[in-house]
Length: 384
Ligand SMILES: Cc1cc2nc3c(=O)[nH]c(=O)nc-3n(C[C@H](O)[C@H](O)[C@H](O)COP(=O)(O)OP(=O)(O)OC[C@H]3O[C@@H](n4cnc5c(N)ncnc54)[C@H](O)[C@@H]3O)c2cc1C
Image (cartoon, helix red, strand yellow):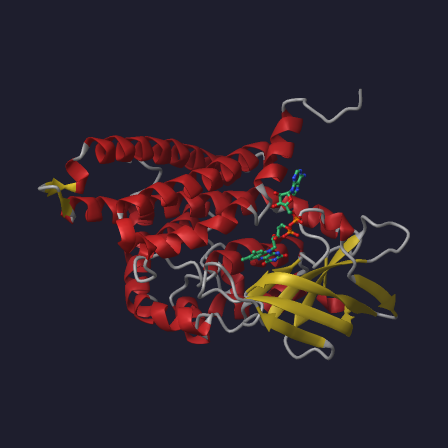
């Protein structure tokens, strides 16, 4: 796409982040896939360069770059190299803002500097074996005991689960009111906090996804985020941005798949001509180009809305829905052009195909997005 919403300063940021990835990420991608997680070192290096929590206040060690476009650039560059395991956007833009928005000044001073330097890696634990889309069904509990809270429960599918030093854990806090949930900052080493299996997945092989267990973990009041009855409210307040992060990632993945394919089809020769010169290829690529551009325009529009403080839940749901469904189609159709090579693990398109499958499920499944959009146009489920 010719015109995007970026200024010269953004482009300089992009250039330096791209160089950082080429130096500190690309050489390690294979090893990380084998290990099932990225190194702690890359987090520290990203921290050193100011790439973690760029939005954070200078008083806490951040750069004060609250413009979401910096996060968007990081997402786009990570997807450009097909790196879905170095989960910097989850840490910086999804979990840390819970502390930045709902934490006390004391909590910000205590937790944010480590998140900015990369010494402290973040995760968020909402999903449980019996409760994913329907979070109200969660069973984890936190019971008040003096100044502390005693946390019990099991979480699953937690990104950064093995690496995380601080986990924002959601748990019910009032047995009489099932919608009262608190958010607790559980730290590495707290007695009773254990990591379960490092789960094997279809894709995103360098991303560590884990079970987490909490067995009578004593969480001090100083580690409770905001009001322990309002956790749902805090989670919901962050959802629009979370879905925009997902959508920006999905469209950037489409763009990467498109670029790899453009390169391949212009090289690959069959029946005495290049694959790219065949009518089917030219038309299919023209269609994909059009659809990706349309999705990009909507993502960029939502970024502008977010920056202005106006991003609605419905807009975020629409672009999350559309971009994840589009990504599924784009990686499938691009893979087709690679023939058998596209099925080989050494080809990025093969990895992108596996990585893409989850985006219609996590961060709110497509069906949940459709519910939100249907309700926003006045269509609710009614008997009779
Ligand atoms: C790789 C990966 C990373 C993840 N990272 C995290 C993380 O860091 N932290 C965290 O807390 N969770 C995380 N998750 C969990 C993720 O958010 C959940 O998997 C997701 O919310 C779906 O929940 P579920 O798996 O329990 O499926 P369910 O809730 O059981 O849903 C199953 C299916 O039911 C359908 N469905 C759902 N709702 C509706 C509806 N309203 N109407 C009609 N059909 C519906 C959908 O097709 C859905 O796919 C991660 C998951 C994966 C796989």
